[in-house]
Image (cartoon, rainbow, N blue to C red; front, side):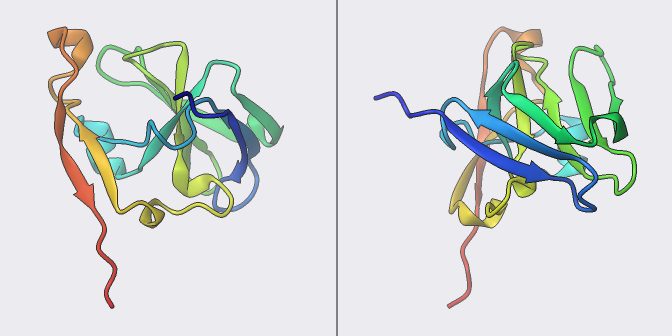
Length: 140
């Protein structure tokens, strides 16, 4: 069953960058990644198609970072440093959006988050592999 497209507003920590993200599969694509950059960044991301992010303000405040193959482009606020989204290496027609930047959403809202194997990236190996599951179990 297809999930209805969901539009969420979001922002960086200081509020300089504000945007709307259209999530074509809701939160069904939520994930973390084990590549060196994502591992250090620690963000939980969800997918939006190319054109699925509309900036309400602060697009000019964004800066970007590329590494290794240079295919993925990671965007963050140049003022507060918060990662807002990235253009995916595995699918250049998609963005990964930081769920922690979405208004009213927290990475801790999800009991389990799939972790994908970014060390052995599917563009290098030809196979997408799940590396594990990140679990959040709140204290009683």
